[in-house]
Image (tube, rainbow, N blue to C red; front, side):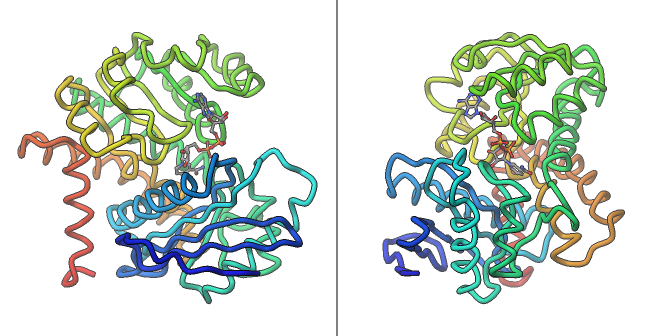
Length: 346
Ligand code: NAD
């Protein structure tokens, strides 16, 4: 495999491009910050329009992992990797993920991966054939998605407590974007809690499954932003809170699993200006990486579970700090994470 160092100016410790002709593999590993421990973050398999787009995504995602792990109080740094290609591809999948495994192995444990958008626990088994620096395996901590979903549910409860003075979500209307791994489990938990769901996905089968199992209304993907509801839950891709979508929102709370929901930092201010309470993405969606600590750090299930429950307290702290300082919740979360990245704390 040909490995090329990316020398562009970023705040990252290391960014590497990997290419392998035989398997058709093209990937990037971005290690953002290892002050608190080895860089941990999933592998995204996505058909990016260009390598430049892929690079932008992996740089933002890996930075988000540093903040997520720091805020969750984990002794882990932030990293992320991507494979460029069609994630529905079945032929040659093993070769592709084994190539990715060799690329990860070349980092000697400085970067550890898990599943993310477009990948599955089965793909991680292929990665495991080439490197032990992979978590989220079927017979170990397993699929992180239900745990991520539960953490998002707790974040919603904290937002409800802050906004409405109660954790109760029964009778609340939740507009859910993305019925994938996390969206599905979140929908189930919300339905059980008595919430009313309005859902969308670009994949007809996925939206159908959630609609029928959770008695949810469905809307077309472009209609989800303007749905009148109490909560908007972005569980698809990033960048969906932007100049075009924020003015359309008719909700009081935004809380979901997607990484990098704000297209730009200033969109945190735009939400604040509209009086919408935003649960910062990396605070709300830390359940998956916390679950991975069962494998990574030999944590007991009970310890991991307690940490996921604590997402509720972290969110309350963020909301209170933001209110006190009159800043967007996204800024309050960044400040809390950055305090944990100070040399004295690390
Ligand atoms: P997934 O690929 O299983 O699901 C994403 C879903 O979003 C897919 O069904 C896809 O069709 C849909 N989608 C994509 N673009 C859309 C659009 N414009 N409108 C409507 N639907 C759209 O991924 P996932 O594992 O469920 O993760 C969802 C998000 O949560 C991602 O941003 C991921 O990075 C983040 N996240 C996931 C985990 C986890 O444990 N899986 C942990 C932390 C963060």
